Image (tube, rainbow, N blue to C red):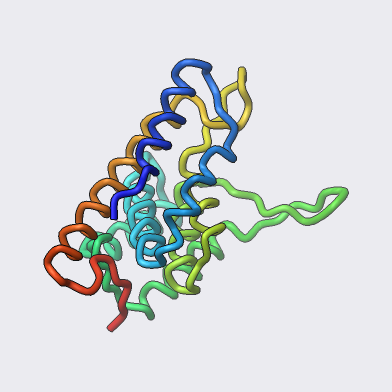
Length: 195
């Protein structure tokens, strides 16, 4: 089931290269791709794995959460994800608790995020555990690709090009596996199951 989504993503990357920046809403093209639920779950695991390797020099609780995330995600195949639901729920709760501080503003309480990569893992697990929707997939992609640049603010710019390319490559692989499964008579390529 080949779609035009990878090409559309590459057009966004080219527009960033040519113009310097693009609006984050350009990534809404992914919502159509996420209509097939198994793709959304595979994508969530893909982003979680990518994010779990962004530990840097983190120590203490943050370093421990990265280590636990990497160990949990290590054996999971994002093309046919199977995982321990109890372990996933505990990791999700611990990730959420690690960044639960809020700040009151004039309009509402705002959650303070100190580590974007841990937030991405948390959001990915939330999609997987609580059957996220198309908008959740878009938000995860947007948060993964968003980059701050003083010249453009928070938008798709600079480092976003590589992240968009990684998503396009992931989609190409998924679609190729879906096509192979369809041609071979296999029911589904990317199923999310728990023991």
